[in-house]
Length: 293
Figure: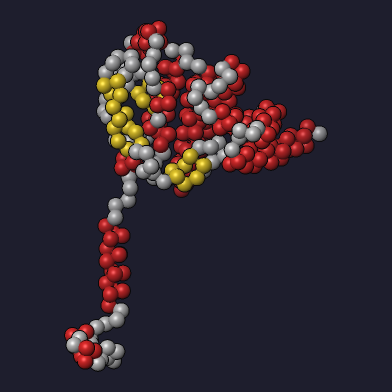
């Protein structure tokens, strides 16, 4: 070094005359690199904890894997309003399932049951239910889908409202969309293989069935219930519209979107989404007319 600090001796700072002016930056960079290398990548189980419930059918204390509020980072929301998070799929943990009697229900609807509903669950579900042999820190997509199916079966047995059954179908459909995305990202190198294409075909077939039943159920609830069992009305109206577009019910979608766009109670963000969906609908309707010529 050329002695950039030479002369500091007159200030009584002789020991500083040979300092390397960029040494601190080198150390800081090295330290930052060490920190980055030691930071552990968040795993799915890091976002979860066990929440305790009392089963309303068998009265046993049960634990359900639950996502910690505010822990996961929201990446985007798709056209169906399905939220996509980083490093975790919360949809896998929304069903509460009792390992003792088999009673399963979406967490939104976990509440007291009537005596007749308890009797129906015990006589139809619990009598034949076989509990999983082990508790798991995380669920696979297949395990989560099985829990949704079990919750739908319980909803049918206890004669739940159409809106609840539709909501379960919607969430299961969302899970299957996520499952398809996961398959494509995780096994992209297998695309085109017979096993991959068969798996994709099965996922899409179940996705179609669940989302179609969600649409049918919400349309029924719209006519028979008046409200959607505590669900935000404009949100469900939008979801009905987007499902109607997917399944070719364009007139239904058009009527609902008009209602959303003209309603003074609809928020600006929802109106923006409805406007974007309407543009898609216009294109779809035009394509249909061209096909019919």
